Amino acid sequence: MIGWLKGEVLAIEKDEVLVNVAGVGYWVALGQATRQRLGLEIGKKAELYIYTSVREDEIRLFGFKDLEGRKLFLSLLSVNGVGPKAGGALLDQLSPGEMVQAIQKGDYKVFTQVSGIGAKTARRIVFDLTGKIEPLQLEKESSPSAQATLFAGGQVAADARSALANLGIPDKEADKVIQSHLKPDITINELLRLCLSDLQRNGSGR
Image (cartoon, rainbow, N blue to C red; front, side, top):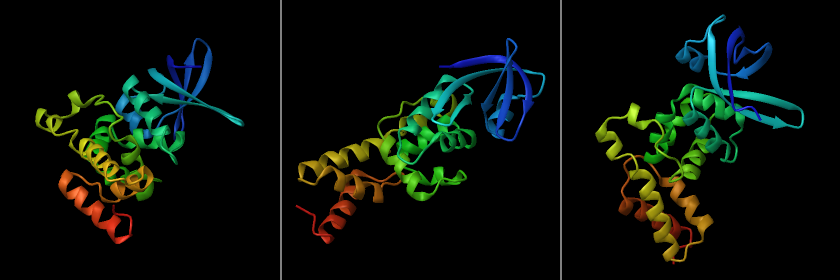
């Protein structure tokens, strides 16, 4: 499996670059915004971390600036409904730091700014990855005050899950109601109040 490439850029298409590595050309999926950040141009050197996507009818390489981006890409692929193409688009249009911060704050709307990502998928990304993502590049992209409050959303969601479990709410039902109310800067008390109100209204409160 190819994990890293270094060579000369031979051609650039809309969402791909052709990299010459020791006389072999590799097409690598790489969005326009990422190419611009890397300063890639025909005739210049490219150094990319790679994810190799293998399907029945296709083998495709996806390129990343660094290992942090590749790790986040793999985490995105674990979310139901997010494939390599969508994951690549997310990392092209949002930095790893922006995505991690949005996940930890419960701000799903950040992801809806990316073409092809609707509110349902955005909510799923935030919900599925809350508490599972490392801070990655945030030391480079966030102020100390932002870092200090970064994990509030993730902790609130985790505490709410635990509280609802203690009340006998099935995990699937708890996950659904938490996801519907999770938002930036929500407190645990507010989240639980909203969740319990919904569950009681639907006859699920214990």
